[in-house]
Image 1: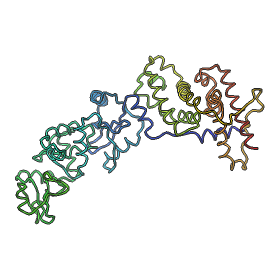
Image 2: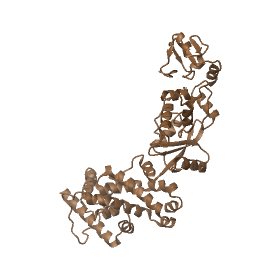
Image 3: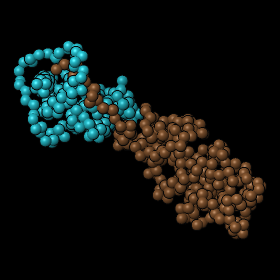
Image 4: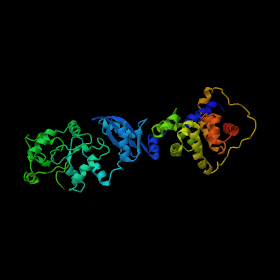
Length: 256
Length: 183
């Protein structure tokens, strides 16, 4: 028997570990890790654990972030040495790629989780009012609670709470500031000026004669078409019905 | 250096410990259990136990740790029960105590060996699986993972002379098994 054979046995039985090996250990030990990632709003800290991404916040002050994290989540967060599939997915999504990112929302209440899951359904280039989210969740009077839940979104940008705006279509609050929210929506193709103009003129909906449907002004780029042939501003549902229009399936402008 | 960092701030340096030792530990556990599917779970447990122990140690004790043999000790303890509880091998390796009959051959393999190579190391695995629980860890630590006898003695909490004898008995038994399977 040669040393070579023993070495080959050693090499053949040397095993790598699964990509989430370290995350599982750290979670079991009671601390999470974070890294810095590039986003549309500049550098952000991304914290994660074995359940998914737990927090996204503006980068810059490590000590302040770690203190905030400990207070909010009751666990320590420390700088990560390596990426794993979860942090790599977050990095890709923050760069603008279309990828699924597991998020850890265990710290949120069941209602907050439902609000965030609903917000996550809103596509890029669209926005919906707080009241719309409340209605979709079967709690039409809970618009304020929806706003509070979105304000507590632990993973902004990954769950696009910036796509939920006030009922008067002003942008409303945002963890990174209202100006950042405007900038983000603009980058995603929303023409906020056109939407605000429509709202100022008292239009709650926009009708499209060609499709025979009517939409919220924040349904894609429909607000920019106001004034073009075939597009009409509407003040009420009754007015839409008078035009023979039915609600858009996508933005569901009225309760079913 | 790593022990010093662990003494200074355990949470902030613990990932470095995992990265440095995860491959040797999961591989060692896999060889001990002869079951690489279970090895990862057990190896995770090794690091979690290491973390909890470190957390309970004063900084001075952390700083003084010889991390590799200490982690192997935890891995050995976690795998020992599993190995002991496993049904005994149907054909346990017998080996004779006595003088080493020959030193390990350093001869480079000839070209005719390369075809048989995959089978050869596979036979080593089969032989290791048949080693008695008293011999297997010392043999693997010494001849596969190449730990020093001091480290092995620390890991197994046995005198150096004992682990030397165990490792050697393992080597003789594996060699005898391979010679038999060559026939």
